[in-house]
Image (tube, rainbow, N blue to C red; front, side, top):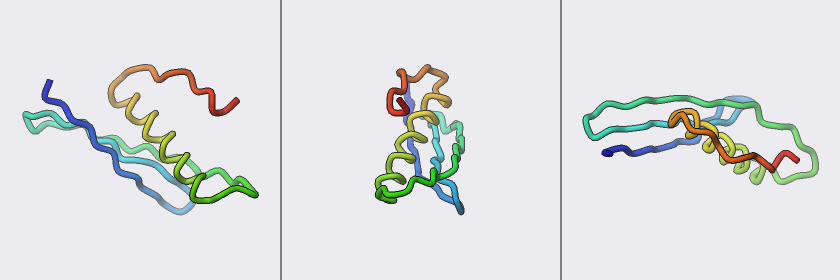
Length: 77
């Protein structure tokens, strides 16, 4: 259908997120920013926490831009 999606990780003090861009071959696009606080988990690897947060942000930002329901999230249980 002439669509492409790109996502870029972004950060601000205490927050991580992504910018999601849905592009069409016509040149039109939709851009959305999804930010969330970085959880303060003790005794864990900060880099792994950041990677997990960015993965979570990418999943839910893409779901929102495409207006589709994401699979059930079992990571929080």
